[in-house]
Image (cartoon, rainbow, N blue to C red; front, top):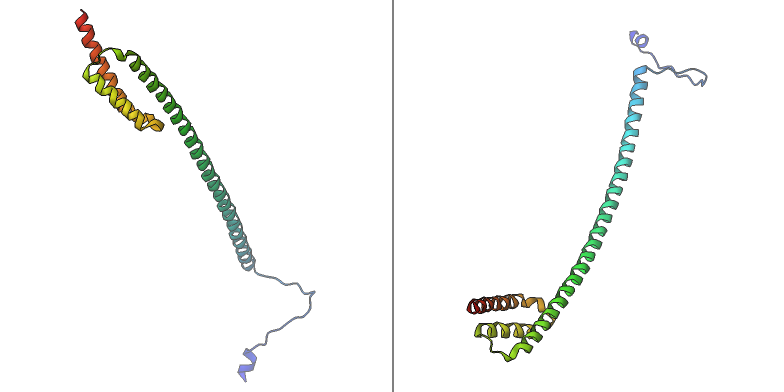
Length: 154
């Protein structure tokens, strides 16, 4: 008997003109969840944009690096060719000078250095810069003989 009085059936209204009221805490909680969802979506969008821009910039830097490497390679090749041509010209001029002055008796040290320069040049016509050591030794030998000659003239 007492059980039916304490138990109440829920009342359901089907009238759309009845105003509904929600508690302030429920409304604030729903608004907070909506803001968080919006913030997450915006954060994902920003992250996606940043990732895309970083990838584009990285690709651009790689391309610039590749272009610079090729440019420097070409410039170095050109400089090496210029240096090789200059060295070849110097060696040819030296050989001609030596040939002109060949009638005089040369000291053994100079003759040996001269032969080494000529042999190296003949062996490395396309890479005459490889003969720098022999040329330096030849110059040194000539300088020593010049010092000896000047000392004897005094």
